[in-house]
Image (cartoon, rainbow, N blue to C red; front, side, top):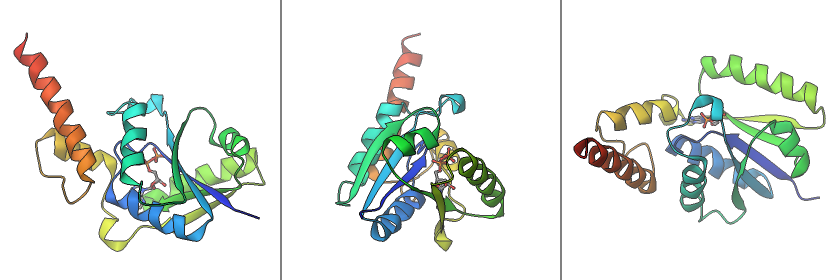
Length: 168
Ligand code: ADP
């Protein structure tokens, strides 16, 4: 039986930490779906379409990985796929509390779906999308933390913002 796992997240934007988890998960399962959450409640910086397009380009060399978007309950999405494995990355104690809580709720909603945690690589434990956004906002160098596709997207966004400021 082929096992399809889902790696869900907001990926706003995808970082090298996310890429590392996706790469490692793709070697553990037959197929991996990187599922980009609409996460409208988080007010994402990049649109859902941008986040999906970037992740698709970034992960295109991984043959058994596809990128999809979803909204609503992750467990409903998992049943639709269908998939019985959710992959999440764990960076620190702070992630642990939240992730275990979510895994518990998800198990309650869909007992047949298992959540599997992949420990972040040591060098990426400090890395988060929000830190990358913050550095980029201050025009800092994020090239060590994200794929060039993401750097281009930040540059485009900042260009748009400066054009609209100049037109005021
Ligand atoms: P969410 O909004 O669902 O938390 P994120 O895009 O922030 O989505 O993260 C998706 C998953 O990737 C989460 O399980 C998160 O803990 C994990 N993750 C985030 N950054 C890293 C990293 N640097 N290394 C490993 N895992 C990470």
